[in-house]
Image (cartoon, rainbow, N blue to C red; front, side, top):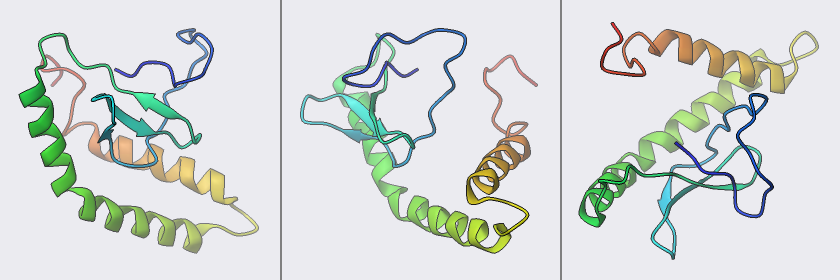
Amino acid sequence: MTQPPEGSGPHGSADDQPITPHAAPILDADGQLTYVGDDGRRYVVGLPPEADEESVERVMATLRRGGTLFQQIEQLCHRWIGQVSGSELEPRAALVLLLTTLETALEDHYPESASDP
């Protein structure tokens, strides 16, 4: 769950679309788990109330270990978008196609809740 970006107005309407993270989450100077969205704004990740500082640190360490792999995936995405973009497909449309296709390909392996098949 993410909270509205810093410095923005109220959010939460049905028209709000999820914001894709542009970079891996980080622990900011205030100790909040944050990420920069693809819209360039900073988002604060709402942690469950039972999350303690030690569990947050474990999550952050895991995310940092995956940073290099994330950068490789990002570079591959840029290459793919560059290869498929052109007169028939704008780069932004290619990005949307890529993200949608990845979500569809992976969602069966990573259901939203434990009760999902």
